[in-house]
Amino acid sequence: MVYKKSRFTRFDKVLVITAAVVLVIALVFLPKESFRLMVTTVKFTQAWSHILKNGELNALIAEFKESNPTVNVKLDNDGDVIAVETPQADAVEIELEDRTEIMSFINPLFYNIDLLQSCGLDRPPKTLDEFVAACHTVQKTYPGIRGIVFSSAVYQDITPWFWAAGIKPQYDGEQSIEKIDWTSRSALVILSFLQKLGEEHLVAEASFVKSREEKLRAFTKKKCAFFIGSAGDIKLIREMNKTLNFSVSTIPVPANYNGKSIFNVSSWNVGIAPESDHKAQALSFVEFLMKKRSALAAAAGAMPGDSAVTTTNSPEDEIERKARILYENSDIVRDYKLFSNLEKTAAVFKTEIAKMWRGEQDAQQTAEALNLATGTP
Image (cartoon, rainbow, N blue to C red; front, side, top):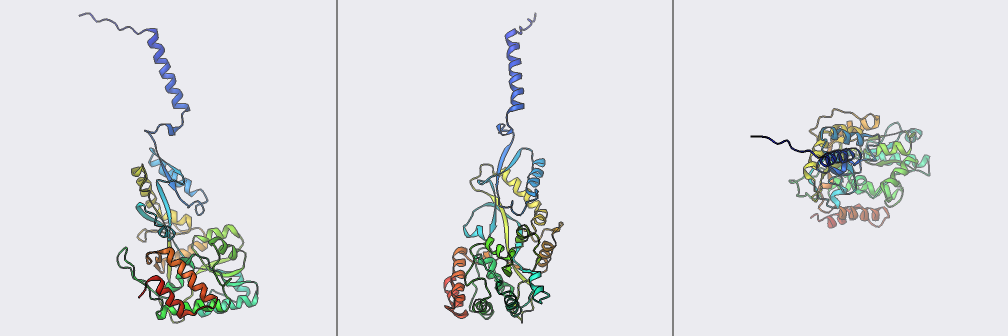
């Protein structure tokens, strides 16, 4: 049998060379996003940029990319992976798949060290009576300064006083809610204390300031001596007033309380948007973030979201380290899990306590109104 040599015409050569040139141009000049079969882009919606300002967030994404070269993470408002803050997220009922807690923030008492020392006070108040006395001392020494300022964030400013006093809510399973009797003796002690703050003009005004930022601004401009805030506020205060000499402490308690310190806790959760088209890739990023809990917490001045996670990293900031120590030596309450309707409960607290501060009702009447509004028998 005779084999015929195949004919490779000049036209065939031109086609091959043209195809090679087109391929080279595509590889060099087309953006990587064009190769959709090679790389999947996962969009990440977050509000961590204000607490991870030193490049930690970008470094985190870059580290994920190294071990997951086929997944690109892009910061975007319409995310596949979404980071949410509780209790705010629970109030608007954000539904996420594979939701997990990444980092937590306690709500301690913030105090201005220089202001207290100039008034002859060598430490922050430990009891409710000491707190009232300290506020009076500050205002007598500096008539233009109030003792404490409250924001409209009830779960950060108001309810922590109740938990600090030893009222320990009981959770019945994951969803069922144990009602709080606000007319109980322990709850009335705190309501009477809050009433005194209003009656004796120790709050910045007989109402709530509008926002967290306004509260921080009052503190950093030395218009108040105390406020209850998130440990995450430490970084913000540092930015707003770099020379402010302040610290954090436990929330004052009734004189007869000798139990363990108790803090209310807010947290950041991450999860996958139900409508995401890239759930497998999104899950790989969520699982990566779970492994980085300790490092993220240290960078944010927070605590790892999972109490079972061993804390291998400590915050560099001295006050953030103090907050971590307070957390590790205290019990915690997640009061956003107690109420079926967070927005309604917060509105009720603000309305009834503002009435008390204006002298329209006393602590007992406020307690009865809270019971009626929150459905407590």
